Length: 317
Image (cartoon, rainbow, N blue to C red; front, side):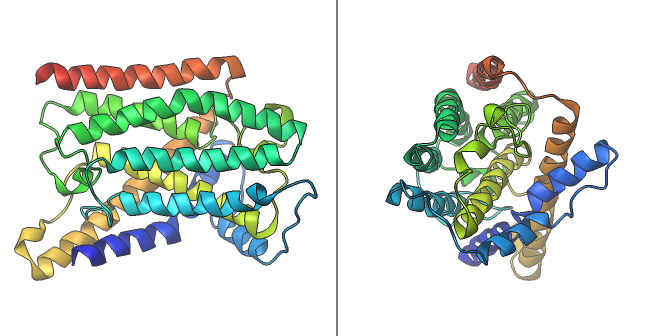
């Protein structure tokens, strides 16, 4: 039953992840008084790109062709490590949070190599910016994961779903600080405003989008889908902080109540994840993009909130 629930959560994530960017775009269009793109626009784009033939620059090597598959595989592996609802992750072991952070590092490394492999000045500039900002964001992300897993003394991400006593009643403030830190990292790691603008077409101001300018067809579809999955993973992490443990009916009653509890938790988790998309859309509508020299300060603020959360939690021990 547990394995079936974990597999079902992964399948739901794979099917619904492209819906999250659509929600963000619809919120931004609503805030701007525009009609905006269809909610399912990313699904249409993926279907169109899959049907096209890829075009490869003549100077590129196998690094360029391997990056899209590598990014998509990493995002899928991240879903295997994360719990969904009150179900444990399909692959759970002590220290799995280190693997999660390492997987995202591997995806970024492969994308940087692909961008440099083209020999383009613009893509090299985007790769340099990505390498700089990721060097600041990745330690903070790993520190946030360590705080989460240290709470249960099991050092596994599955405690976000299975341990209802992960937080004490008075821990709402460090939970909010940790969730806020992860939300800032969500904006940075997923190239959202105020760090980057995924809808811009000016190469001089782009970070992530400029690195995939030469990808086309199914390769671009893999990259777009991997980006949607990464946004979904970060949203699941924040939901796990704000709504830890068993969220609905307990499984201990078995039978009908166990199935009802599983369904209730899935609905609540999906609503919370889509709520993160709505929140991201509001933030992008109300904020302007930061200047490049301000981004390290933005990431330092994420680290400061994570440190405050850690000091508050560990100071009570």
